[in-house]
Length: 126
Image (cartoon, rainbow, N blue to C red):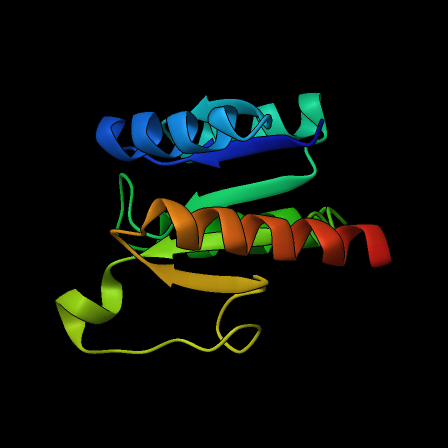
């Protein structure tokens, strides 16, 4: 069973994402802020990190992704964002932030499972 950590300050997103992923047999751990999320990743060594861009600060997710990579944490990161809808800006994987994939919130259950399975296969291939 793959272990996934979701770091997002929106309780509705945490609940919905957790429900979808646990229904497919994944072990899910959640954190509501970057500090707790970092500690949970270090402690639990997940197979995948799902990370929101905007939490306490509008760019918390960007900085946390960079912090993971500086600490040599190579776990795939799926980044939730609504930034492009709010600002009109688009982000490319690996250009601004060292993540493996961006998805717009809200994400459908089918798309979430598809992205998670894809990134878990990448992790196995590493």
